[in-house]
Image (cartoon, rainbow, N blue to C red; front, side, top):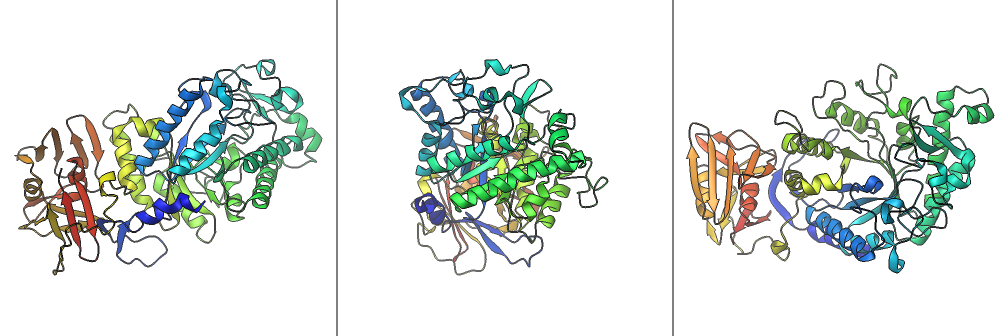
Length: 539
């Protein structure tokens, strides 16, 4: 499987032109050169339940299923996604050939109905992802049987384990769940994952936050039978612990290279209820879902944890920084990796005064994560929101430092072999050195240069509105505009990019982040670290 990491290894030698000098928590910071980090994960969830991401509708047509998969995987590659979390068991069913679970109704339109031509979606997704050096994780919901209310057991496929074993099933708010207390249910989940690992070249097994669905879950029958007088809350947590430990042991025994991870609710517990918890007031997994996610990570029963921190920085009940700091501090000495689940879906259709407008919250969260040494990456929820909202796609792509295809052969990052004998950053456009009356500067790892000089060098016409502090630049059929002091970059009056550093005035010169404005004008950008040289090729 080493071929899957070839691109990452190659890209690790392709340094971008930005220089970072941030101070990660708990370590001594030294200036480093920003590059494609082979250790940093950029993941995305692809939901199949309710046909949210894939497929667009249930069909047995293997050509359509392949075509939609190709489109998603190719778009993920372009965004620099390293890991796809593909939901293969949304509702006690399967997006793969299984002797335990029936084919999913979300796949073919009818539970138990197989796709045509012996098509196996999971195998296809794995093969196509691996061709593009992307890891593929099988995402399962361990206990959920139905995700729509008022579905009867009799309507499920005849081979559905819930229909075959009705005594294992509990109804909660109209939906059906397996009872986590029943040992046979735990064995069913473990056997299902064993089947996946034995039959597929999977990179990981992933569970989300569907454990006990709530305090009013009617498990009185199993509690009376198995509770042995325990506190009911502790008994429920022990039931879930038993499953997680069993999965850890089984996965480790089958293939130690396969990652086992969980993305629980972002808050483990609030400090006001538990002295070990975070200084928050939101719903916590420890009490709502009876999931001791902190324990699993500290005991290293899981390889990574990806708490779904779905609140913005500054939220008055559950502040993003407070939560991720708590996780980073809690796991500082644990081998369990820490990823953060991000709520990209909250950026859809919000008003301009919302912190999520134009992806502002997501950009701020990614930038904050990069300052914390313990955080190894993000997982975005979910594919369609990221892909369909151009500003989100740009944020994810830029955060992954993905270079354009036309630069992929320029491994030396100095196409004109120019030497920079000064200590200052030098900028070259189409082989010619650009002379600035204000030296380029570094702001939060981004190189800023005087806007008029760089736009003229790029062959763009420039318009400056002194009253509004707005800059417009037009090259060929592309117009970009922005306002000094604001991070929003507008392309052709419709597409939005959130810049990581806002343009600003330094010593009476308006300075702009060179990479983002150059790439917005469809130029190729190279960075030669040894020469502190930015090279730009116009088209």
